[in-house]
Image (tube, rainbow, N blue to C red; front, top):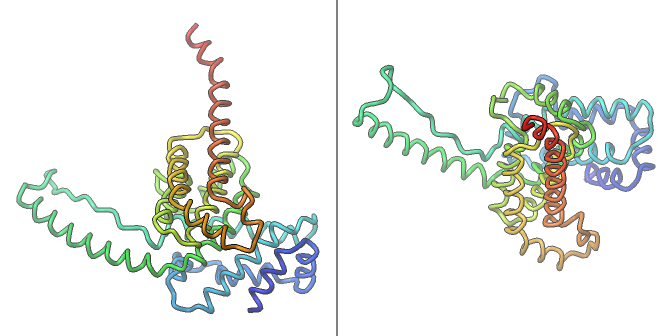
Length: 307
């Protein structure tokens, strides 16, 4: 209860954020340790927490994430408090992204491809291998389905929202993105892309018309807008594919969001900035404008090559 009250207080104004900082010189350190208990914590700690049946622990982690996010948004004074907060957020972001994007607790295992020393398996062995593989995959998929049903999406949304806020403030160009990418190993692979991972989040949560899934989709759209707004670099196929997934998700969530708006007493929920379809439209428009700008910039070079 105390954590929830502090989260509400920290979200109201910068003066409240100032009071919180003055009340404790170690507030950032304490909250960060609640979120990530140890600098050398075991990889997958937060991912496992998404499945723990410890409501109090999960509640404390949600509150810590919300308070840190609110302080980072509200507090703007150029002083030692902001410096400590910014440094802490720089350290927290890659750890959060590693957990919530690369160690997705609902991600189904990919089928492993096997070959004999001589190349392809014989037809008979291939058939046996196929049957074993299907049985194994069925068991793994059943386990993945059980895990997916038990994921605490309220906690996941809080972690994703904090990540989105830090990402937006600290990542301004593709050079920053590349540097952030380098801090995420050991699970990064050559095919890794932020847009590709965000697409996985969108696809998984657009299948479930719930309030928490809707919130996660809105946060993912915020991160997509941040990606599009990065200076330099080019928008690739992964970003285009992510955009299409968001468009599909906004249609799938349209009825749920309409019901929630009608039933809500919070009038701010009807503002375009709070509606998924409006956020997705904003992202789509930004992407189109950036594509047009890149095409215009490339035109002179193409004309010179042609001549």
